[in-house]
Structures are given as structure tokens and as C-alpha cells.
Length: 286
Image (cartoon, rainbow, N blue to C red; front, side):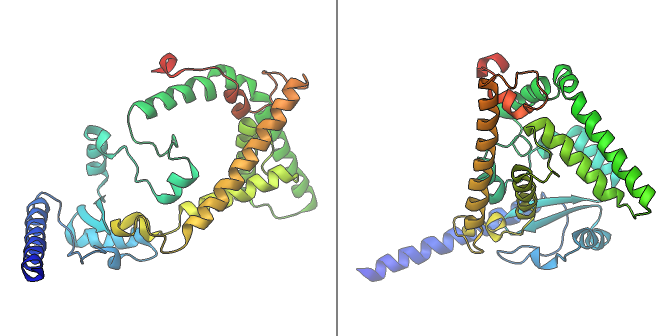
């Protein structure tokens, strides 16, 4: 009885593979030209640490519109500016959604505005951001923050100039940008010396690093639920620390507001705390 079952199973598997191959060949004919792909990994073996150089070399062989398969992820590489403009002008919606990675899903509750697919949720968050984060009232409210940080930046350059010290403009401008954003959003200086600022700066650096890590689970489908490289433990650790820091900042600001040491128009409250206190329903924005 086992023998007929094995025959049927083998026949099913062979038939399935044949159908997949035929479908792949048919779909392949509709794709741009590209190098020969290997099973499972696709074109990953062709990539080098300097991917832009790899793309340039491959495009010189296969043309300015090229197809690559990175594991299970289909990619189109465009190396011609006019062609890129044409694609983004007439096919913007096709390319407007970013590829979600496990790090993004874990650390942003799978609801990040920057990485959200184009749709109703993205439109809602865009409208909320435009009116509440980037509106004239908010920008006017945070003008003292930007002015103060700019004065601080200029005073640092002046002091170092008087003492003859070498100044890294890249580093100082990065500090200026980080301090303005963190004060506008959270009410703390990112480049300060307090515990909250140090913790926030460390977390931002770790998040940026892990977003850029190569995770095999992101590109090969049968590894999606298998933590091959042990990233999930890092995701969970960063996620918990990030949540704890934000909750502490929100509690501190809420406590100050309750004690009437801060009000809704105080620039030290931070936009994040103000947004948290806004009564809002989805119907108001959709």
C-alpha cells in the first residue's frame, strides 16, 4: 500500500516542479535582460560589498534596464537617468512601496510611515504628519528650538576657531540636526549628557545599524520564520529599550503638564507628547 502512495507523491512533486519551471520560463520572457541566476540564491553571488560598482559592471553587459533576483526578491536595476525619470513619472505607484524587512516589522510595530505601503493608512499618516507635525503652527512653535540650537552651533565654531582647534563640520552639522529633531519631537537634546539623551543616541545608532544588516530571512522565503543569524533577540532587546525610553519621556512630560509646569504651547514638551494628547478619530482624517 505504501508503494502506490510513494508513486503518487513522486508524480505530484515532479508535476509541481514542471509547472513551476514552465511558469518561471513564461514569466522570465516578460522581464528585462539579466545574468543567469542560481537556484535559491538568485544573483546574490554576483554582489560585492560595493553594490553600485557591481550594478554598473552588470549594466554595461546587460543594458541600462536589468533584472536581478536577490534570493526570493525580484529587483529591477535602472542605470539610465532618462529611463529612471520615465519609470518614476508614469509608474510611480508601482515603485512607491519599499521592501519590508524583519527589522522594520519588529521595531516599528509594522506600522511605520516611512516604510508603509502606499494605501489608505499611508494617506492617513501623511495627512496627520502634514497638519500636526509640519504645519505652520508647529513650525512656529518650535522656532525657538531651531534658533537656540543654531546659536549653540555657531558658538562652538567660534570657540574652536579662537583656540585654533580643527573643526569637523560634518560631525557638528550632524549634532545640530540631531539636536533640533530630538528636541522638536521629544523635548531632549540628542547630543546632551543626560541619561535620556545618551540612551536615545545609543538606540538611534543601534536601530540604524540593524536596519542595514544583511538578514538572510528577508530575502530567502523558506528562511522567513527561521532566525538563522540570531537577529530576533537583538530586535526584541532594542524594541523593549526603545519602548521603555519613549514611555519614560511621555510619562515625564505628562507629569510636568499635570503639575502645570508645562503647557501645550511650551516648546519643551515635544511634538511627540503633543500628538499623544490629541483626541482623534480615523473618520476625521480619512
